[in-house]
Picture: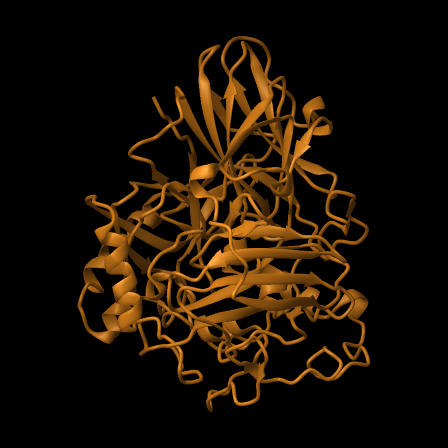
Length: 558
């Protein structure tokens, strides 16, 4: 028996109103699709998201598997949510937090229609999936934004089993309630377990005392104490680095813009949500000072969140997952936070790690795990008799979220409980080994792309190679290559770096991942096979770092 659990919103009638919009926007013309034309053109010579190469890769993916069509309707709408004693106004999917999980079997075609009831444009990004490029949900790059009042059908083959999730890629919308799990089941599931628990971790600020993620970004964007942003470097932040795109061998390309001009900063919100004025500061200051963690190499984060959640609930009113003593439980952890790493442990239990970011690893026991934003881990536990806290410590921020595993009698653990397992043996991705079935074949990289992570909290000028995001700049790759991304973190902050449309290997025999923590002052080399043509983002999954400019694009050459 597999029983994912969740808590729903107040006033579900708001979400149910989405059916009318779907009926009104189901036509095939440009207005009904939510597209305002194709994304803006960039430099020539690259595979376009709707190109024949993308269609051929999807056809090959679909031919290698077989399944049914899973139709889903999803409404992005303003909603009132109960976080557990605190009601907030926010945006959510179908009025639930987390959004209702989407579950398919590997080989199925997902046909999900997004109805946008929000006051601005949005999109859906399918985090971790190797899918067709024009369904990746990055507005201004792989698709046009889905305008307010419109709908759009995402349709693609879900070829690989695993734990994934979906969220917008428009501004800082992800730091509202717009996220949900996507579980792709394995038709030949090798694991044996009795129940399944999907656990979504989050940090929460929207609607609390007047705060919004946009206002948080505006405050952070002023830098520490409103400091002058001129740090003595040139406008690229790189001390004189050329502003062109990369050439076909990883060098700089001086003509990379192809005539497409747009402001490089805050690019996703400006292309997806329109030219929205900067919000006026509202609510108390949310800038965090002095949060530190040895695990994260120093500074733990930028944002002082008032709440931390497990499956949409605070520790004062936690979700309870029920099982029987002796049950073998598969827990799928997803960090949907905007600025927070979580250290997670289940009181009284050891966990056996079986997967990370959807891909199997050599089974490894541990007391605790560290998850950066966007990371996922699957574990197995054998339930003991009683009531046990599943605690998610906001690493370096001195607060925690909690849920309860109950298999018997006894009082529930209190909200401030700190199980000893949090301070026990802790595993991170670099300590895991890929299962033999998913290891990359040995081979030297055909191309190495250096990606220097730059910027500071003082100026809040986060960037890659000293340059803020510009969708017209592409780092070229070619189909069939083994590509190495060399993340060089020159900042004093940690960054969870995420690659769209692919998974990479952490070193020889290391786990297959799509999101990995790069500590300050360190270099992380990851390898992937270029087998999914299109235009794909690489970015920090701290939503405020990304929206400030720490994003770039890998482009397949024709």
